[in-house]
Image (tube, rainbow, N blue to C red; front, side, top):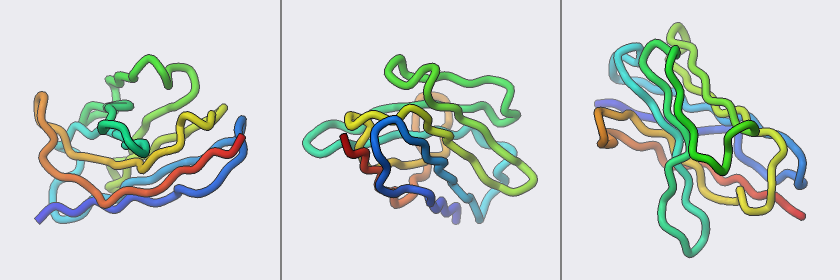
Amino acid sequence: QVQLVESGGGLVQAGGSLRLSCGVSGGTFSNYDMGWFRRAPGKEREFIARISWSGRDTVYTDSVKGRFTISRDNAKNTMYLQMNSLKPEDTALYYCAVLSGGSSLYWGQGTQVTVSS
């Protein structure tokens, strides 16, 4: 059974940075495309970024381009999301997921990011 565990969330002031991690166990991490999503209070879950199994290909939603960087370390079975220049509107519960085509196969429980103004 594939399990995902996010970490690294917290409270940060606007303009600050955080790095989220997503550890994956129970599967072959290096075979998976992976993604980050978030859900803000009262809003739908939103796609943020995805990364191919090799790490060579990445895609970002427009609102985080130039501020967030997705990466992975297949030797450590871990994916990362470096978040810089954080804004109050980035406040959300952040999730990682294993992706297959246009679907999400497995999800983590999420880690809370709160950005104060």
